[in-house]
Amino acid sequence: MASKELEEKRAYRLQLFVDSFAREKRPDRIPHTSAFITWQILDAGYKLSEALFNYDIMRKCIIEHCEKYEWDGISSYGTRNPLQVTTTLGTQYYRVDDEAETISIDAYELLGHDELREFAKDPTKFLWEVCMPRKHPLFNSEMTKETFQKTIDENVKFNNYSMGVMREINERFAYPASSSPFIGFPYMGNEYLFSMLRGIKGFSLSMRRDIEALGEAADALDKLNFWNVYRNLQGRPVGREPGCTSDANLMFLSHVVMNRKQWEYLYWNRTIKPFIDEAAAKKKNINIMFEGIGGRFYDYFADYPKGTVAISMEQDDIFEAKKKYPQLAFIGGMPSITLGRGTKQEVLDLAKKLINEVGYDGGYVMSLDKMGSNRQDGNPENVKALCDYMQVQD
Image (tube, rainbow, N blue to C red; front, side, top):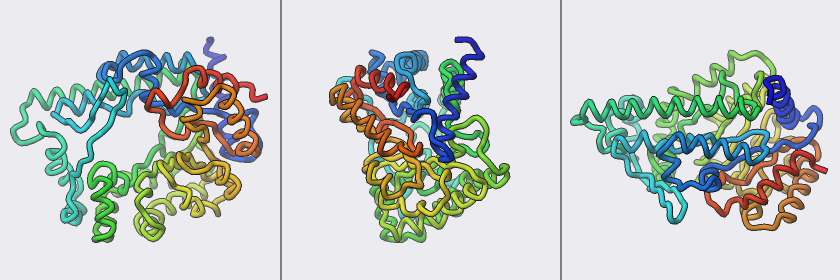
């Protein structure tokens, strides 16, 4: 496809997302995105271990995925599990099972509850001197120069792959950028503590034993990343960021163990509300990914103007959510169990229902209801039929 045609296609797709999120007019058609991750590998005929440890094979899997199915955008470029980097330091938390066709990660805790306040005093120092050796067996005072250099080399390879494959895929298949490079993806301290440092069990216990200490640790982490992104947002001009489907993306997971009081103390008042207040003032759009069940918190976003918040959901009922919060845009809705095990007609019937009942006003982007990881998350014939249908939407 000629360069001019690609640019026209990218501009058309971008406008579909802008119209869907801005809610000023109904888009020409409802856009749809790929939420598949390791399913891409299996669908391309490779074992998980073959692609996860070989960037050339991973690249082939992503390219085949984009060639085989007509998407308006994709969320995974094969960069989610950088196993080649972590294994150089002896890390063994990831479990790749080619027979079961699964990848999992062992539960671990790198930061004890009684260390939260010490951590908050100097999180950078604590991460390097305490957490890194706990996670990576070879990262210690006896680590050789060769091991350290190998890790650096693998990290450079991973970064080169990440930047290269994203640029290549977006240019080759005319996908618009998913977020602004000036705002992008602020990672909140709560999520870092929940997913990487305290763990699900440890985080839950800390909320009940000393929520103030947990908040202090989250605040310390937010100073390293979140508030820098917030200041970038403050410095941006009013209006949508050019060339991207969303101005910024937020991902929530720690909310699954919080009640509303804990949510307000650790999350809403500390970071989320100030960030979205600023985005609303700047007339920008924030895409919020609620992993797991998050519907009990949607009402916190109900008073923002149309076009400010789009919610990417997993386990909540998208039809009920749309009825209750019509001012919000929603992403998702296509269950993996239907796409993977239903008939082609069931998939198309559900797609029509989603377009008519959720996307009636345009505030909708079709996508899988979770990150497609297993072979059963999508029957290739069903996925192809859905992609073809989304281009015409009769």
